[in-house]
Length: 366
Image 1 (cartoon, rainbow, N blue to C red):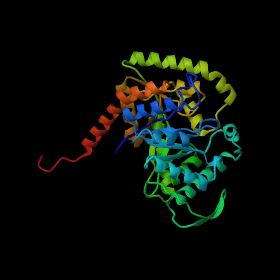
Image 2: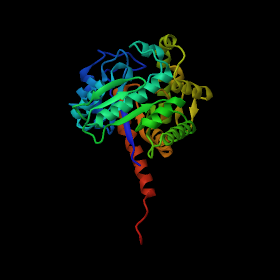
Image 3: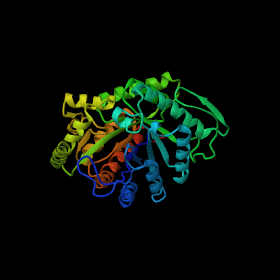
Image 4: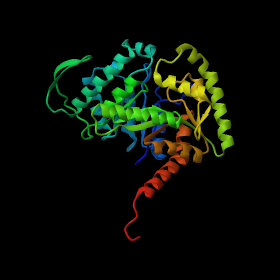
């Protein structure tokens, strides 16, 4: 089973531990970071979405024209554009990138953030809308004949696109969420299902729920599973833990006001991260939860701490659960992407190759 690595396509050098040094869209930094991911063995990078952030589709197009071979994961919120418009944007970007696009659909887990752009649906209604949106996008990517749609959230007549993706039959669809309604929607529609890093047993439970919903939807396949972490690596275990505690201090210092303004998390994924943190600081081989607790369970926030060998073995534990895509992002975004690519990715790929060799039957008579 192949393994892929997803990094972050950031547009500036800011992170949860330090403010950015330049504009929100720093063109030189954006290219430098993407090229570092390409050079050090990453497969694709995520262009994330925020209500006030630079347009990720345009940032992704900018990178695609300058950094060959690097895959693009474009985050998109269905509330910000009509699906017939969005599917043309995606198809055009797939053309620009010569077939390197995957689209990640964000349902939205925070009412305040959604409301910033006029989205006031309930959480369950948002998932219903996302599912319908994905269905329209898939059909628009593949249908050469005009079609009508009359659904719960969208209605139109006689639409057909004149721009189609390079990829056949279409780009992959990525999706995330940790609630039953998310499993139902993503299990039915996603090619890739994204989870935040939790202990192995909890991750296995989530994978089981996703598979069950895929079967319930009548699928003969199941989504690929992606899991995201914040790796903290150093040459020795002692240095790695010293680094981890320095980062935690920065998170606590910078993140206090942010948590006070945002309040308790509304989304199930963040609630799960906080529940895991309440059960203990360390889990399994290298999972460390105080980073999630310090940010109020904000997004991808559980860390893997240790030497490159320790972190690689921890990632292989998730691979052994069936995780095919490993997402990682450090707190010093550029330098950590280089260090992870240089020291961890080769070890994981070697571990995967060894597992593949062990599964391959020996030739008769050898």
